[in-house]
Image (cartoon, rainbow over all chains, first blue to last red; front, side, top):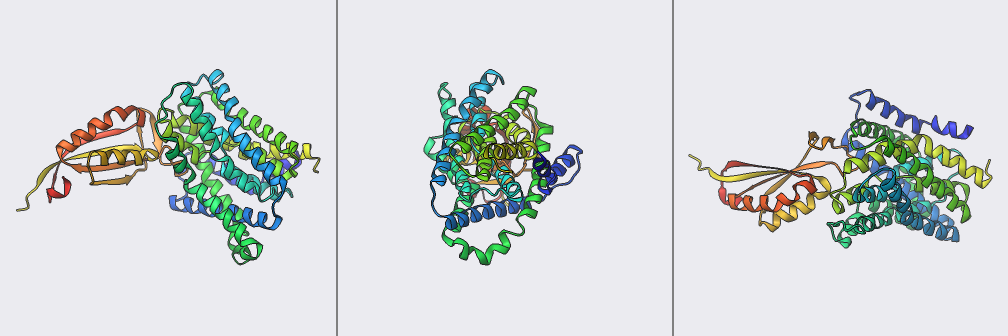
Length: 322
Length: 104
């Protein structure tokens, strides 16, 4: 686990910890809103572009197809055991359990970006097509979550078509997919002139962004009222269990070690951008403070500090990588 | 002396993801004059909230409407069933405006 310790001590993770500690200490440290949004735009553009360029270079492979299908399957199926656990162990009502389950079937872009950076620094860069897998895994869980809520007779307030349109046109999804396509079209030659903007500064920008995320996550945890110790425990268990399932699936379909780790990171993460807004629209009776506390204040920090190193270690172990 | 006209001011505090739907309700009530204002943080029955700039699921905005008393009655009637589900805060107060024809 020496490599994993190095991961925890990487500047990227340490900036997140700094932000969290500052928030717990009630420091007035904050990142200006427009700066935070700018950092987010940059990261999404860079990760999408680089993924597309790598896929253009590598060309189509069956690994890409299997990874995409695995991602879709995980996004559709992971909400089910999560829902059952939240109902039985978490004692949540159907609508809240369904809303939270949708978060855990979807993915966290920032966790993925952080994971890719850590894996790349560790000599295990995931394949470029994992960015496309990320985009594919964003929305199916929303449909599953709504189906779980509706199966109990819950009134889903927004027509599915309109909800899907709004979710698929979510700014983050549009930028990620659009940048990926641009990278695919431009290829290595087209990317070369703009590479100085999107490659060298990437890690530094990620550090600043995670500083802000640490502040946000810790403040949310401090102010969380809806969350019980059992739900905190479940948030951690879901990250570990779903991530492990992702690793096993990735290994079974024969992906390279870095891509296996990335799939595990995606499976073990929980959305806090596209899905919360979708749930607020479609299931307004669900408590946003609850699903945000679980995904942003519990699972996200756990994944950044513990989940990514653990899943990287597991992927290496199963893949036989040093 | 400038003549002031009586109108109703309705302020609606609503979660960001539900703004579109709320504005549709304004249009259903034939209200075309409103302003959407950003917020920073606050506290209420549900506890403290803050605009955390990340999720947008809990961020809130204030919609300020200036309209006639009749239309504001209709608007409040339409919003009342949604108070709990949407987590709305709705406040109505009398207002005096110049150029009342702009707020019919």
